[in-house]
Length: 154
Image (cartoon, rainbow, N blue to C red; front, side):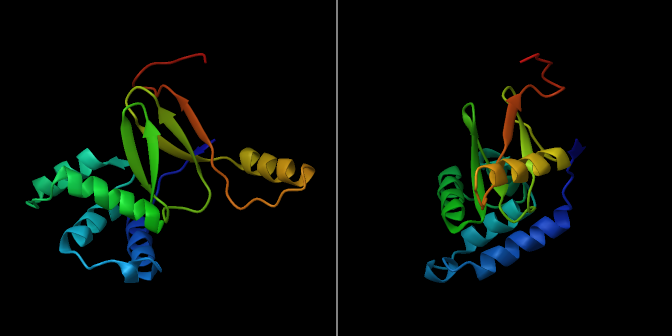
């Protein structure tokens, strides 16, 4: 299994480009705060609203946590972000980050590792063909404990 390490500069550019070209963007009222949140989100991945709030505060931006939550929900509706719920946390990932990849999600700390696996890709195609399916979306999330939180046989 190959752990996927994203090229953050490419992700940032793709996220910003998707935002500019989004058909829903034209219906939105322009907002400086929304642009600041988008710029911060574009440079981070698998981030909570609280973490975004903290990083923006460190940069001197005064944006309420509620505004960040509302904006991230809006970004999800626009297709810029994808919400992933684990335990009591919601993390937001980039939809423009990478084509096809899967996730390992730690149920203790919420850490998310992205990975690619050619065998999973082969099986995905094989299973779809055997069942007469044409796949449009593939999503695989494996939940457990990361190496920092301990090991589990389950």
